[in-house]
Length: 247
Image (spheres, rainbow, N blue to C red):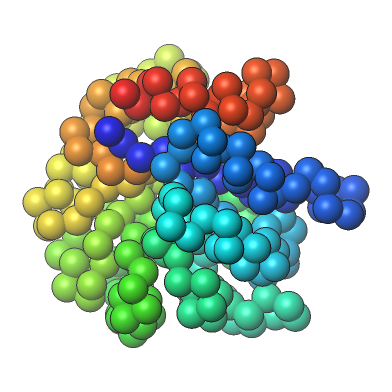
């Protein structure tokens, strides 16, 4: 079964909009775990507009030995204020997986993957260090990228397909081309020995179609849609709904 990793960034956004400690991101993680999710994802950024370093540390304490912990972020973004940098956070908490994403402060959300030919040299020492820490390394990749031997040779174990274009095409009633591109990307990644994750704008509406087209899909990371749907149905119920789709 494809693992569901719930991204809790939006819980932190709601908390930060008011200040204080509510809603409690650790309680949200506990609710998701009790509902059966296989992982928790967070994406701390240097501007700390949602998940903060202290959230990353607090979650590590309650997740260890229970479910997978996936931390996403830009490995090239340096320390700023209380944010020590992605690699430094990984050194502290030793997550199950680190998903490297080439985002910057100007982006509302992640909207593109790495250019492997351009970025592989800079990624190589960072991937090596993360692997030495015992973290599985995944790279955020656009559908249509085929240079997966470059990723495999530096120690990357997975890719995460950026599914935003697929979700948009699905909403417009024309998903075939975008879905075919994702499926071809997954096939080429598997041929290079990499496992395949996926994430961004996946929802209860479009997830089943996506999963059916991607044999061997290892993991989906879902946050924005899942938290939005949970406003109507409850967090535990929504997590269980996703798990039913993935079965």
